[in-house]
Image 1 (cartoon, rainbow, N blue to C red):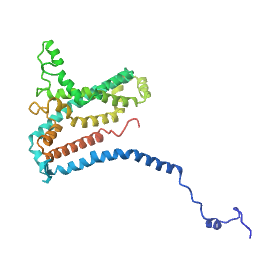
Image 2: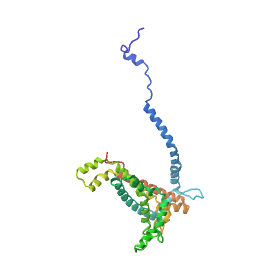
Image 3: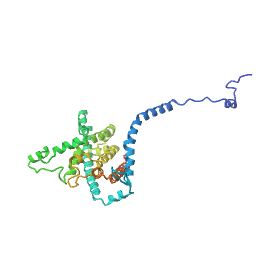
Length: 318
């Protein structure tokens, strides 16, 4: 029997031959191996996230619909905690104080950080100077609050000593209804402005130099260049900075707890301080959980609005 060559075999003969099994592409196996390695390293962090964030958050949502003291079992009361907020004057006062603090903190911190970032980008090329700006952020917030609390003390604080030496009346920075929140905002601006400036500085570094060269050739002034080129191209970073700082500002607690404890006369009782006092001062964990849920929803809404209307996920460089 004569064996047909490949050229002599017809289409039917070739179709009857079994096809060789193609091995899996190496790239697919490599991706699968990379995924296993990634999951191996992510898994411990996921355990921490589930145990210390996800589970407490779900339990907090549940407790917000209950009347709960740590000494007893939760009792389901529906939405009574939420309806009670409508007539809670202390809650509305705390929200008003928090909004006042957020406005002062965000306004001054963003402007000062932007100025520092521009100076680092144009003038200060030293790594030492850039690192020095970050030093206040590396100090614990409680230590910073205590430091400024002593420096601004009405009787023995060095700041009031200088004010008195200049012939001006002393100022009760933490003891005055008028000065309490602006002073707390100033302390936190001083601590966080270096970190915020470095975030903005990183955004400035991503802007190509040829864009500025073209603007210079067209005769654009530094002011026109800043508003027409720098700020539009910096928008995604600025939106990120605003989202992070707004969320952090709404959650201010330690500076208030160390310096004023919410006083004088509720002038600095921010929403986080009110939640803490309700939970651990009055042992009303159900109502405190409802306050926390409302704060969570407010922060989620604020972040969504900022990302949506400021177009934080878009860049003019594209």
